[in-house]
Amino acid sequence: MAEKVIRLMEVCGSHTMAIAKAGIKGMLPDNVKLLSGPGCPVCVTAQETIDKALALTEIPGLILTTYGDMIRVPGSRRGDNLAVRKAAGADVRIVYSPMDAVKIAEENPERQVVFLGVGFETSAPGTASAIAAACDAGLENFSVLSMLKLLEPSVRALAADPEFNVDGFICPGHVAVIIGEEGMRFFSELGFPGVITGFETADILKGIAMLIRQIKAGTAVLQNEYTSVVRPEGNPVAREEINRIFEKRTDIWRGLGEIPESGLGIRGAYAKYDAERRFHIDCGPSRERPGCRCGDVIRGKLDPKECPLFGNVCVPEEPEGPCMVSSEGACAAAYKYRGMI
Image 1 (cartoon, helix red, strand yellow):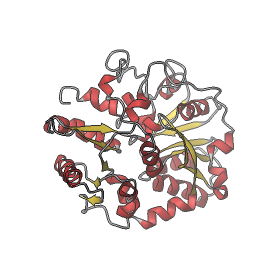
Image 2 (cartoon, rainbow, N blue to C red):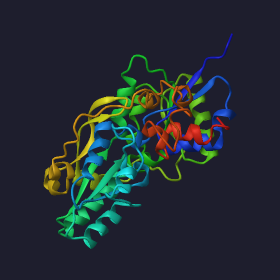
Image 3 (cartoon, rainbow, N blue to C red):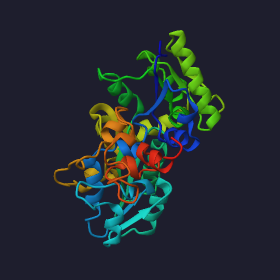
């Protein structure tokens, strides 16, 4: 009798890239399958949010600051992205931290500066600190387009799908640093074995082995392989900073749709630093790129190489969706390391 197929999902873009780079899928038995979930923050950003970022570049004199991952994410209109807008004259600048954007605002007091705040719980403390710093400095020309999202609601949305077929989760080490082991308990509450792992090949392989042991034993608990970094309580100071500046809100995810309390909006006390409130952005109707299966990849329903556009119409130089252009995207990882997976 054939062995049961064990399906494990990682929900961290850094894990996705590390697994591909190390060729881990090829090291595993044929009956152990690895799937990529909604772990890439750029990839799960809804198309309408991408279009809002593009619309900001049309405001005269505005400086748009962003992480490099966002610069080539396609808009609704073919051939449109932030790199194209920059080439056409828009002032789009790549920064390495939100505080870089605050500094740009201090150096350009006569111009509005917007930071694209993309990420999960890992990035949220830095974005919150930037808003707090702008407030303390009395800056009137700095704001954030919050694209920040939360891990737990997305996993609950996945699990609610009757067609969802996963046996266990490789839990994200970076997010766990912030929310701690206790913040990851929801995996076992949903009935899934979960292991928090680091990012070295040995960490990931050990985490996979721990998951397989759980599955064979019929248990569903949370284990922490990444004990050198992740504490049970996480980082309370970082969470306090997040809660001071942000509040939970309903948000739209690519591939998952609208999920209640899954995003972080800027609290009313800091409304002047909210780019959506400040500029009342109207980007018109948005639409997914025809044929792009990024949403199915994010849900673990499709391997990137099974998409008919993969490596054909959709390549890193001309991506059809964010999964191919983000440095943490499953399609980008599959393409870059296609000889190893």
